[in-house]
Length: 80
Image (cartoon, rainbow, N blue to C red; front, side, top):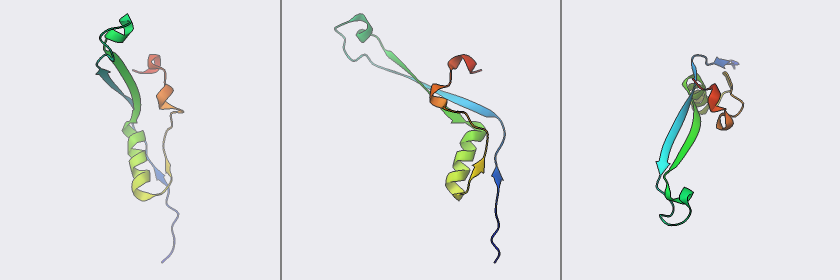
C-alpha cells in the first residue's frame, strides 16, 4: 500500500472564549481588598482553532490553522 502525505487544513470563524468566575474572599477580616469576591478571567481558544487542536490530537498529523500568538495575554480591548 502506498504511503500518502496528508495535509489537513482547518479554517473558519476564529473566536476566543472568555471563561469568567468568582471566588469567595480569602479572609473576612483584614484589608479591604481581602474582604471582596475575586473575579478571575481566562481566555481560551475556540471555534476553528479548537477544532484544529482536536483534529491534531485525534489524527497525530500536523494541522494548518490560524494562530493567535498567546491567547493567555490577548488584550481584552481587541475582543469583540
